[in-house]
Length: 243
Length: 243
DNA sequence: CGCTAGGTTGAGGTACGTCAAGCTAAGTGG
DNA sequence: CCACTTAGCTTGACGTACCTCAACCTAGCG
Image: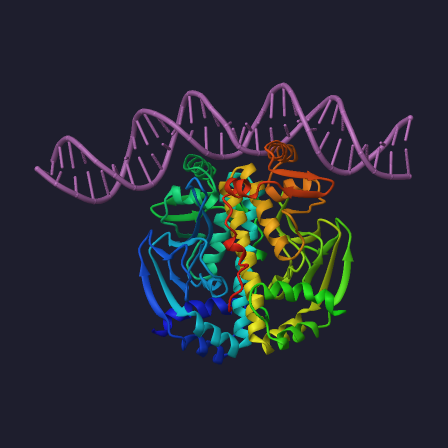
């Protein structure tokens, strides 16, 4: 595994706290395997018991769950640098799948190796702990969005969150980023029907708040979007601090 | 701090994996402070930066978030034995409050002490990691419920989840448990209005599925409730296994 | 006895879902 | 080059799950 790939993870961790050279070396020296996925592929299938965890190096991935009628809900999104499947280190059978929403690249390391590194480097372990705690904080916000916000607020919140996360990972410039997904996928993220999703996207377009075409979106007025969404980025834990 | 209080936490951890006597001793030897809270009190306030974490010893606590109109959503519940505020070890400013939904008792330990114990006992650290990962798994399920399930299914799912968690913590017998909360609080958990919450509670009552009065609820037909909710307890990670 | 918190019910409104049709752009085969 | 198909987007009409407002009821309590 060439080093540049692992750098996306190291950069993500260094957004949380400064790392020692030894901690970085420990990460680099893990036996990483790189795999490429096409849009629609499954990175981690439901029902399996993973023995390795993966870091997303490129693309957009989603955690997909189904209700009993077969409707799907994407309960979480992952971007470049996210340690997507750190959870599986602690959990057993996957109760959902991780799927590629766009073409993706990911690197995988064995659970045993990760556990060894965590035992040897307690501060590294705390950084991993921070990643899982941050994921949980994002998940709580999504819960609030689905429980107590209108469709348009939900969409605005999603876009505000994504642009901040993508800026942090170096995948957004000028309030814009690649978003090559269909409105059907967006509907599954927002917990809406396709038709209603289309209508609120149109609303934001007509209000001059977003420009979304050919797989790229630009937020034309972040201040107003953040006001609509009641977006406060604290929960993303992007401030570097001793942990 | 007398030992019996810490035992609720040790019991919760031992539901995940066997612990060594040394690990238990390390937990017991932490400087725990016990505090009692009345219904409605705040255990951990929004906007603060906690320097200690708490374990719930008795009662029901909720994580409460607000939308900009001031409507509240309870995004997570905690029962006896839950390490409620382990997250704050890794995070900074609280973006929500933890409140007592019933009278509660909790024990608090300093972050620094917990970090020391985790550095010294890597397996203990992995168990804490498992707790946070499990919380996140529960949160993903709530996201699915709010996004893609009808009100009655949501309520059924909540009750099925609660009875399993309370059985595990020894607070439920014969499919019943104490639930001394108002329907207004239940509405904030389910993301519904009070009126509609009342209607679906009445539905489940009339269908002979639940008996809820005087602060106690009994699930009269768990099989049918689980079918309505599409409830599969795997995600609660209650199987003891090496972690 | 009046007050209050909580539960219950009805009537009407709204944010969303469902169904259906038509549109466009890209790809495919002749 | 043109039919033809298909995926995705868009719009209209209508249905429904849930919300809001309002009234009333009950039990507990000072």
